[in-house]
Amino acid sequence: MDDDVVLSAPLFATMDREETRTLFDSMQQIELTRGDVLFREGEPGDRLYVIAQGKIKLGRRSNDGRENLLSILGPGEMFGELSLFDPGPRTATASSVSDALLYELRHEQLIEWIEKHPSVAKHLLNALARRLRRTNETLADLVFSDVPGRVAKALLDLSTRFGEETEEGVRVAHDLTQEELAQLVGASRETVNKALADFATRGWVRREGRAVVLLDVDRLERRAR
Image (cartoon, rainbow, N blue to C red; front, side, top):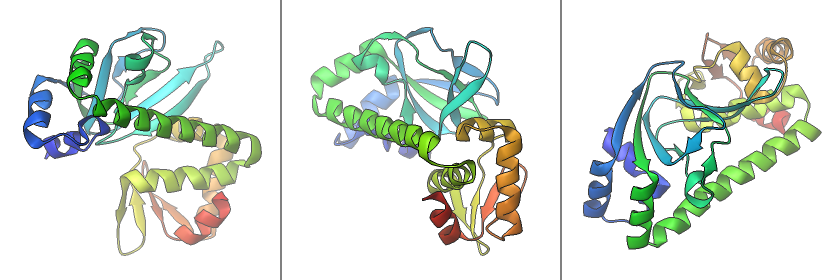
C-alpha cells in the first residue's frame, strides 16, 4: 500500500501509528507523469516530499547547458528536507523519471511537527548525513574511478533500491534513458554505452531497454572497487 511505503520514510520513524496517520492525512498528494518538473534549481524551497510510487531524479545544469544527475530516488525515499535546516533556493531540479505519486509536506507543517516530536529532527539529520555521504562517495569516484568502474557501481546502487530477484539474476528497472544513465555516471553516453556493451559481452549484464539484468553481481562488485 502507498501508506505503508510513505510511512517507512525517516520522517515518520519512532512515531506510533496514530501520530503517523495524523501527519500523513495532512500531506497533499501530487501525481506526476514522466518528464514533469516538480521544482527547478534556484526556486524558493519550502516543501518536503516523500515518494509513494515511481522515481524522481535530482539534477543540476551548468551554464553551458550540460546536466548532471545527483541521484535517482524511489518509493519510501524523501527529498527537499534541506529547506527545513537551511531555507533558501532549491539546489537542484526535481523531475519525474516515470509516472510518480508523491506526498507533500509544507515547511510550516514540518516545523510544527518537529516541535511536538523533537526526535524526528534526529532522523531527518540522519537522512541528510546519508545523502552527504553518498555525495562524497560520488565525488571520490569521479576523481579516482574509471568510467567502467563508475558504471558498475551505479548499476549495483540502483539494484539495491529498484532490483527484483529473478531466476537469471537481479532485474533493475531503472527507467533511465541512455543519456540520463550517462549523466548519473558523469561521463559521455558513448563511453557509458561502451562499458555496458563490454559488461554484456563478458556475460555480466543483459540490457533490456530502460532496464538491465545483473547476471554476475560478484564480477560487477569487483569491477566497482
